[in-house]
Length: 289
Length: 259
Image 1 (cartoon, helix red, strand yellow):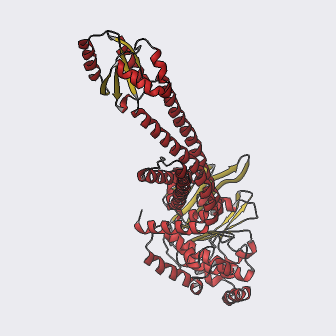
Image 2 (image 1 turned 60 degrees about the vertical axis):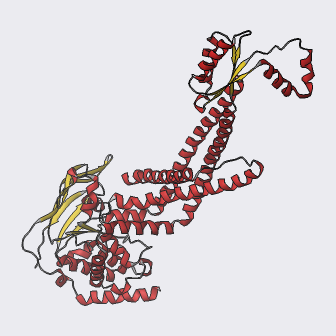
Image 3 (image 1 turned 30 degrees about the horizontal axis):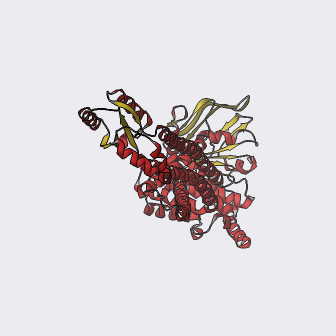
């Protein structure tokens, strides 16, 4: 393609955008709102998985020791625990300490403990795990393994709570994926429909261009550019509206986080590609006729 | 008298076309030599437009083939059609100008799609617009022009790339007799400069006086192909050249009234 041809194609694109301002901006609004639904869900997911991630840091696994275990055996267990994959910290909690903690947790009801003749709680090791361990199946396997060891009474880590949280996050991801697919389809559909209307309104010009020997590329590129620009404007609209909603929501939930710049940039590029794809598909169908 | 060397620049060979059960053209054979002027005459529905569309490859024959320069319809890739169109100028009854562009831009479009440089385009378009007598209207929009003027612009666009063949489908169908003459004269002049012209018309009375080769088409068949009997500058054959000058003046006058 000659450089002058590139210039003419750009001229054609500008001319077309000027002519079709009304219809183009309408479809930009529709696409922007559809995309808004998508980015809103993704942002909610991002925040929720952030919260869950933080909760993971609070996760502690307790390995309870059998009664009357000697200090050597206890020490052995501590080293074995420290040697396990993903274990970052192992702290010994004596039964006395545990009872005190329990008493603190009961608060004003702690006097019920005085009814006990002896401390029913076992000694224990409390483990802090690395983030690679925050998966219910990994945790369950680990707990099972430790439970087999000699001198271990039981292993606990708030299993039910953890699995529930995990399910919640997975549910959000699936919803995002579903909504994402629907929105993507509708955006491509809206764009290719807009372009089809543009094509019909410019049919005469396209016919004339074909008559005088314009290649399909020459005819197509302005439409593809139009689609890409629509995608860009729609994504800007969506991100702008989301930022607005975010600012309002942050007043009530100060811990909320927004997308990073590279996410936003990536999203805009993605929508540009989506837009040009929609155009390209509509155009290809038309030029084949 | 133009080039004495005869070369076939376009031809259709055993061309048939049907749309479903209905045949539109049957076993058509035509050869057009360089610099030739050919009228394709027949009543409406005879298949003239269909035949022209086959020649500029907007549609393809059911059987047989079309050859334009090096392009052969049966061996064409779709992607080469644009390149074939650049060698053939096409004019229609309804002008097909782009109303959102000036006269200059309309003519320039044909060269732009080839990627011709702007300097060359300016030079060439200026030259062509001068030749069709409408250089002074270069910044006007087609809607501001009379029918005759619009057709001149369409012709200017069709010959912008100096095609070897100009196809004209009822180019005078929308024009009054006086303007029709002036358009015919313009086509003769273009032909005299070396471009072969194939003009389809239903108006036999209009063309019989010129003594040109006339192909008669009826119900999709060639019923007669009268070879050229007169050779020479066709402009001499216009009954009264003062009529065409009058036509120019009148068509100019019409616009003044339109405004």
